[in-house]
Length: 121
View 1 (tube, helix red, strand yellow):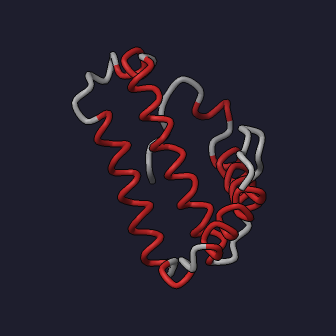
View 2 (view 1 turned 120 degrees about the vertical axis):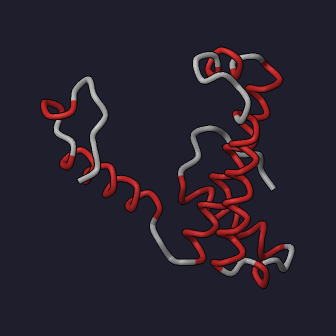
View 3 (view 1 turned 90 degrees about the vertical axis):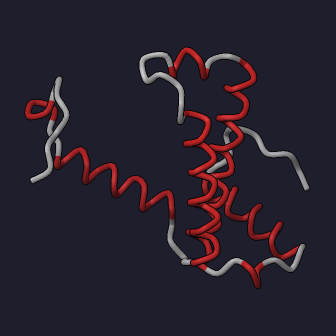
């Protein structure tokens, strides 16, 4: 299997993950619930890396090579499971993401939220 580059799209990653799963006969294990639980587990592993870091130092501490690599690995795992879940559910993740972003831009116009966090109504 070819090594991927940082320029790969969601669709390309979806194809790679689908091939990877089919080649190993793992599709039988990739039901939505199992993929979601795996995704949550990976988010937990990412959270664990930040758990006891002082909030005001987290960005600088994550810049250190070893932690930076681990954070990147966990984020990669999260993306892979998310893309696989979207594929199984037949959701176009690129479209869903851009549609959601457009909705957020509309909900939070710059002039009404600039400089402060929005509150929930």
